[in-house]
Length: 118
Image (tube, rainbow, N blue to C red; front, side):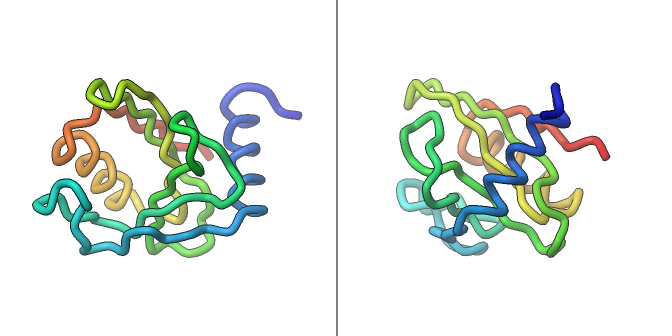
């Protein structure tokens, strides 16, 4: 197995490739608790995986079909008292920034974007 960032993203590739992706919220729909917060991209989770909150690993899905895992957002939510990752699948550079801004600027969750180096 590859070490470091290469190994991390290779493991995420495998999880994404072998998991069903369920879209819980389509782009343009409102957040269930914050109606003014509108999802900029499709948002869902990987079935059969577990994230920091005990649910499936969260994913934002963009329009660059076939790009795979292009980045992760590391999040820390002081209100919920949790930290987790959000996987960004098939996202363009603009979509990466829109997902980051949605979490950080709109929802107020601390987040750090980690793009994949290719």
